Image 1 (spheres, rainbow, N blue to C red):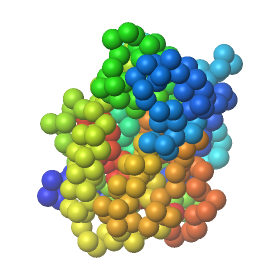
Image 2 (image 1 turned 30 degrees about the horizontal axis):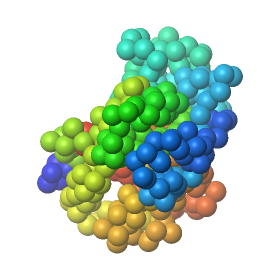
Image 3 (image 1 turned 135 degrees about the vertical axis):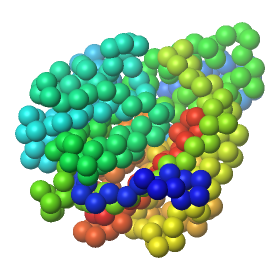
Length: 343
C-alpha cells in the first residue's frame, strides 16, 4: 500500500478475478406496489405518486420468497462462481461475506454460508461490513492475500434481504406523526432491493485467461457518518447532504488518482447502484460518458454491496478482452473505494 495524497492506494501483481455470479431474488415488488401501500399517506401529506420512479429512477426491486433466504442465495452464488472458475472447494482458503443484512449479531453470516457451500475447515471465514462498499473491500483483501501467497483462492459473497426494511418503512410512514420532512428522510429505504452475488479470486499465472485485478484506492470521509443510518427497523437518510458530500468525497478521490492510471479513459465504469440522480452526478462531475456506466437500479433497486457485482455480471457479455473496467462506489459512513480490473 502507498499513500497518494488523501487516498490509500493499492497495486496487485498476481491477483485475478476468475468468476463472478449472481442469484436474482424471485419476487418483483414494483414502485407502484409501494405507492398503493402508501396511498393514504401520500394523500394526507399532499405528495404526488410515482416519487420512487420519477426522483430515483427505480421502477421495481426484488425480494426473496419462502423457498430461499439471503444466506442460502449467497451460498448458491458462491458455489456457482467456483464451478464457473473450475476451482474445487477444497482449494478455497478464504470466504469473505460482505452483506449488510444479517440474521443475528452472532455468529457471523459467513459461518452459515461456509457450511452451506461445503468449504473445508482450513478456509478462514468472516464478515466484512462497510455499507455498500463491502464487496469491493472484500475483493481488495482477497487480492492482497493471493498476491502474498497466503491463499490459493478466495470467495467473496454478498446477499441482501430488503423486505424487513421495506415493511418497517411502510409501517413507520403510516404513523400519524409522519410529516413531509420525515417522509423524505425514510424515502431512500424504499429504493432498496434484494439479491446475491459472489466472486472468486485466484492467481493470474494459474489462470492466464482470467481478468487481472490491477490496483485500487480507498478514501475516508467519516465526518459524515451520521448522514445515513439504518437497521431492520428503518433507514434514515439526509438525501441532499448524502448526494453532495458523497459526490465531493468521490471526486476528491478521483482527482487524486495518478494521471498515468488513465481511469477517465476506461471502457466501463461499474458503480454501486443508488439512483439516476447519483449516477448522473458522477458522470457529469467526472466527465464520463453515461454510455460507459451500465445501470441495474431501475429494475433491481439498490442491492447494497451486491449491486456492483450484479451489475458486472449483467455487463460481462458486452466486455472485450483488454477492456479496462473501473469499479467504484461510495458507502454510508462516508467511504469511497475504486478498483481497476483488466478484462
